[in-house]
Image 1 (tube, rainbow, N blue to C red):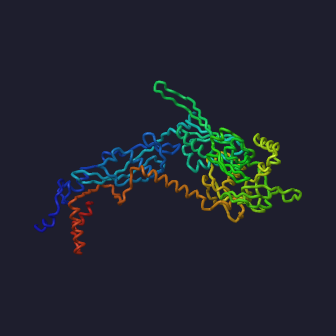
Image 2 (cartoon, helix red, strand yellow):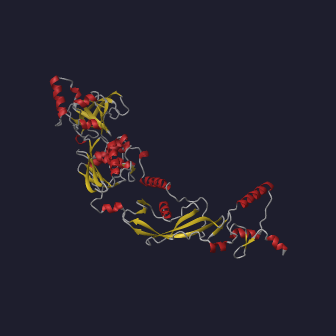
Length: 554
């Protein structure tokens, strides 16, 4: 009898069932604690989650609607926030995960494992399942789409020219910087597009973006819808009319005398080689470059003399580089002809800024000012003034070269995504826009160019627009979509309340007694140190080993 007492002197009797157990702050066995304590009784086992079936978003109270896929971290965070009291300081979330349900059941089940301190410092870990009933609720955005007042502000972008290359370029810049995310609708008009927004601040931000990418002038108007005189509340509809300057890339312009003098006497016959918030000109006779701000243009407006629709093809017979003024533009003197078959045709000698790109035998596009019927007041005044005063006629050349002509390709190496795939496009203008992208490195910085999976390199030669596009700059649609989803996930992950634990979770749904005794931890550390120093083997009593398996003690 004494021998048995000596073996069991490290155990005590449970205060309820008198079973031999290891000492713990509650002095009760696991089964008794199960019957006495339930730390999950304060949490509801059934909740309601609202979902809009039009836009497939979930309501995060009070007003925010969020996009979340099934069994995603975002949806799990939303489900945990619905349970009241779960995020108190005395409760620790050990694990949370979704349980499988039928797709058509309109139910979401989440298994949550929590840990809480009860009964004089004893920590209990238990699991419970919460069922979420998915109910339909139409969000405010979808409600407005079915009414006549579906927008609050609109931005009307207009450019009064006979092509839409500028509008196509703006579409790609809008997609490049994700400025279309707040737009609820867009319509195509004769000379531009209309963008609609739910908030005035979104429209102002979009308007400022357009003004930073093109020379514009803005007109603002508003219309009163309803008002409450007692509470001083007014509801307006706002309209921002953005007018883009009717000057495009590759246009030839005859500058007015005031503007030419303010720009250092450039021109007056100049080419537009770049468009952003300012208009960039180059004099093809001297390679001098200047830029004109948007407010200066609209203070003294003028129109282009000819645009790219009136370009004429010429053959380059010979070219001689005079000066290497710039990394892109070299001043040269070229000998050109309209046709190679007509022997009676005289050659034309012109100065050009394309000395870096042209070689004998190439074809080049240019403006024929001698045989074209031009109706421009500034140009007529310059010509008449030069004839009366017998000035140098070289200031007003007969031909102005614009760009090199490349071979047409059956299939392009790259593609671009449209802002709205349902809108109709002018194929001629759109193909001309794609050629501009391929030939201009500056434009490629503001356009997302995707790799054409159906393209075959064997079909192309070295003198095509495909040869100008770098393979490293092309994007893969699948890779870009995955990277965008990963960026959104990382941004949303910062605001999540749920963080997955690093330790392995306990899948058992039953309750487990967890006792953290500081004295026992210190003793165990001392025993481990002694074992390492003395390198002696420690034998464990089989009964104690079984006891460790039944009670989880840390």
